[in-house]
Amino acid sequence: MLKSNPKTSWNSTERMPTVSATAYVDDSATLIGDVRIGNNVYVAPAVSLRADEAYPIIIGDECNIQDGVIFHGLEGSSIELGKRVSIAHGAVIHGPIRIGNDSFVGFNAVVHASTLGEKCFVAHGAVVIGVKLADGKFVPPATLVDTQYKADALGYIPDDLKHFNEEVIKINKEFAASYGLKSRMRRVGVR
Image (cartoon, rainbow, N blue to C red):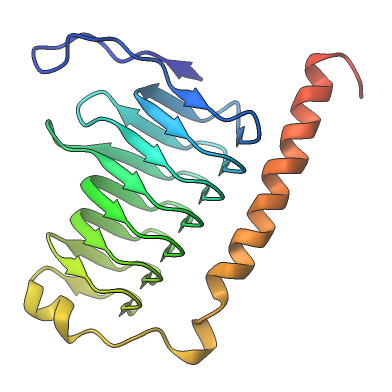
């Protein structure tokens, strides 16, 4: 569902989401307001991208936003994903946020008021709040990173996970193309 944001005291302009013709947004996903979806993006079922308080929400090319993910933000903030970013099932992304190219955020992870460099990996169940992660940093599963000291002490992505996001991107780009084709065919009555 695509719909405009409501007029508010902090935003008097209603905007509709914009979605690239090469992206796929599932019918059960909700996009509200100034949400900008790039090329070859996959937005899975039950995703909520709400640019009603924080705006814009920018999803770069070849990203995937998986089932049940929530994007929202604080008034006056924004959310921006670079290219080839994966946000896995059930994650919560709460602005202000900037996530660099080729980064991965795992199942049920929470990232709030933070900046992630390129090729960062936030593992399943981790919580990242109010910090800056340098390029290539690894947040282990179920870890709380809520001070810059903790963020600076993180190690780099282990060798066995260095190419994990590339595989996730490959699969979800194919989903964007295949689901998108099925959706277009359904609209013109081809089964």
